[in-house]
Length: 106
Image (tube, rainbow, N blue to C red; front, side):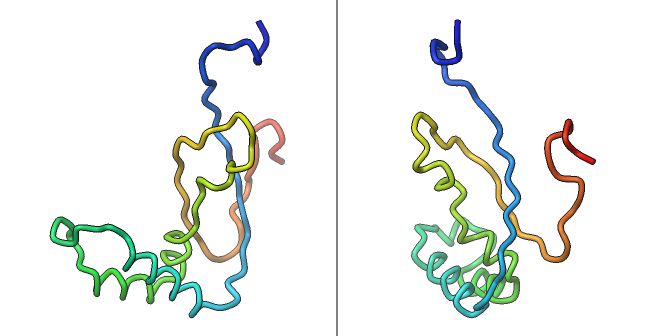
């Protein structure tokens, strides 16, 4: 039996590290705030309220960037692949090493 003959979906983990430069912090924050305001959130059921959440986004570029990045789109144009979930966050500073599959790490 080959991979192509397999009757069930095979779950794989995709690991990526993406370095970005925030060239316009105000635009990033504005997009994050706009998306938060447009989201269908029942604030009565949340521990936070909208003004507090907006203030958090404006105070933290990491949080703002992580809130607008859509990791599900990374496989949009890949045939035969369905996004099932993931986690994305932002950090500043130099990248943490080592990164990569265990068999090719220095």
